[in-house]
Image (cartoon, rainbow, N blue to C red):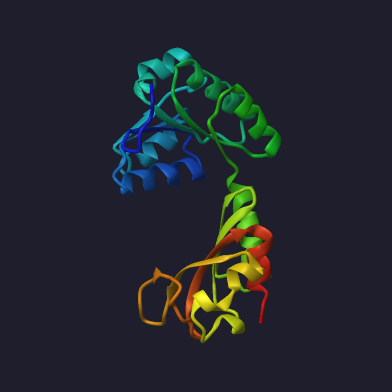
Length: 220
């Protein structure tokens, strides 16, 4: 079954990551079927999640009974129990679910999940640690790596970027980064273009290879 953006999502495993994900998906208007094998956890979330059931996700028949086979998108949010994570993912693949997101606790775990058919691997602890490291170590206000070597960064402009139109600044040629948006104090973010002139106090969003955005944010 092919997946599309409006399709409902089955979230399996309701620890901190899974429950937060299920609640946020619901807040955004996505229909969610939340599953956990622990009755107390399911009961504690029954008032917040519309569809939350107790089931053993390592049992194919249990998955069929709660309707997981009807979904085109699923998230395996089981982390600490590697055997359950791997078995659940393999059962979802066997059910023909097209879009499977699987939480991994290590890169090795993630590689195993990929080999058995998970289409997306999530390493929440690693990704958050990497993001915080970038924020702590420099002038970045926010950091998001969108590929293995490409990032979006929120920061403040370097001195040499202030007071001159971006089209004349040569920043892209010199540093290999692109300033994609800017926020002046008291205003909302807007697109940056060749005529944009940055000022001290502005906040900018830049895009580029990780090493280049890091270099640019370290400029005085």
